[in-house]
Image (tube, rainbow, N blue to C red; front, side, top):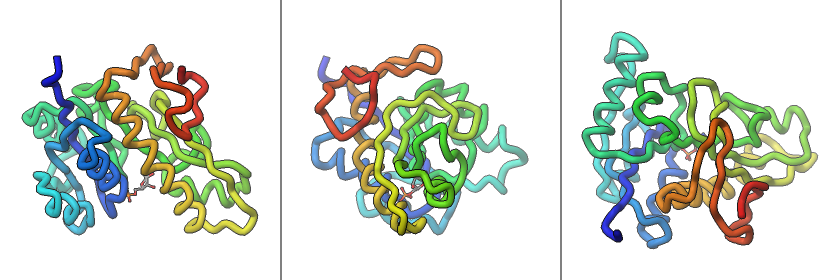
Length: 218
Ligand code: GRF
């Protein structure tokens, strides 16, 4: 006991503010895990700067260098396996990941989505919420399956949507919650407090542990 530490592999395509929230959670001691690699499909991703700044190894792996989706994701899975990754974290990875990686990491790939799934999957979840004029939106951490944002839901956090919200103002409100619930979900995983039965995810945590709205907690 005591010496096990979760190895995390992060996939990100852009700004990487969720990646940063995970780094900060580890550096502050909130999350006992280590990020063993950042993989990006985008050589311009600001996430790369964050990796460099924090001494995290990184790889740029571009899909156009592979013949098809299967070989792309097999290669990424191989890189992750080579580093003994126990959890793959999609932190703004702007692609629908393929079967080749999902089968290697069943219920071991987490994604954050900026809406309350199953509402508003896919791109621009915040804009979809503003356009639909829902009164509550939020974010969802879920395990990744082969669909688009359809995998088992781990935790969600809700925020109000105001009549004068824009995509930007709602995104900003949701992002603050993303930065809380993503590290929290990873922490729960790292402590073995998440179990999955089909599409049901049972989280073993105290109800007052955070702002998270999850009827299955506790
Ligand atoms: C976040 O809104 C996340 O929910 C979505 O992509 C965005 C990534 O932002 N999947 P960042 O790169 O983590 O700042």
